[in-house]
Amino acid sequence: MTHAIVVHETGGPDVLRFESVDVGDPGPGEIRVRHTAIGLNYIDTYFRTGLYPPPGGLPMVLGMEAAGVVEAVGPDVTGFAQGERVAYASPIGSYAEARVMPAATAVKVPAGVSDEAAAAMMLKGMTARYLLREVYAVGPETTLLMHAAAGGVGLILGQWASALGATVIGTVSTAEKAALAKANGYQHVINYREEDFAARVAEITDGAKCDVVYDAVGKDTYPASLDCLKPFGLWASFGQASGPITDFNLGLLAQKGSLFATRPTLFTYVATRERLEANAADLFAAVGSGQVTIPVNHRVPLAQAADAHRALESRQTTGATVLIP
Ligand code: NDP
Image (tube, rainbow, N blue to C red; front, side):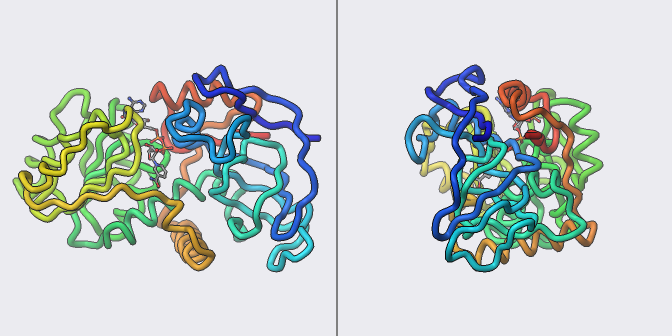
């Protein structure tokens, strides 16, 4: 037996229950991992509320991301051994002291990367990586805008984009978050509670605007995010912290300058073992070289995951939060 956060019915943070669950032994293709740190992600709230349907139905153990130690290896698994440190960003079920999972989605954690950093970087860091490297090839010529710049993905993306030589603009909701974003790669930070962010982007760029806008705020920043793009610019809408966009108008892309739009998800970008390994290797290299530091700013006991959800959804957190089993 072990303990996990189980959701029996979707809803607010109160539906998260800390319960005893049977962990079992790994079958073919599986490993059992004893978690040392678990990553908190906004997507966990989408599954909790029912915005995203539970992949295997209810009840479900929440959570996508964690790091830990391999405790047992299934019959035909190669490449992993008992006692090795691993981390992963899927499948769902990480809010647990221990779990059985497919070996195919786990990667080994290099020496020098702490368990907390690994638990905080697999989902958020690989997201920053595919956004900067694959959704758009960011380089010294790129001007980009990232919303929620002081968040979990935001602080990683800012450091990495800056290391790639881009002009990096971010939005935040408080002065404290603005200072943090500035310390993490953002050359320009806009407080979108005080200023019209599209007007400020035009000012900052002398009217040229951005090549790409990374927008995971959703409802509240649509359609103004489109006004931040130059002709042929790319709008990467990758989340909905303020609520989903339900009135997307394709015609706006024409009106605002033959824009491109994409709605990417990490899980396509790491769907094959080759993709996962390439993405994780690039991320570990960026962290190992010191270009990117993983900001673990909050630690919460696993049993109190509901409090961590309340803090994330009320915009009180910065950087990453890890749940400690
Ligand atoms: P964050 O730490 O960034 O937290 C969300 C932030 O969004 C808040 O801190 C807040 O920053 C901002 N925000 C704006 N409006 C609201 C609102 N109404 N309610 C709550 N927050 C709001 O979370 P994550 O780093 O975990 O994730 C960031 C986003 O990226 C999420 O939308 C998530 O779904 C998405 N994501 C998408 C992935 C993909 O592959 N598609 C993968 C990973 C994450 P501020 O106060 O500064 O506005």
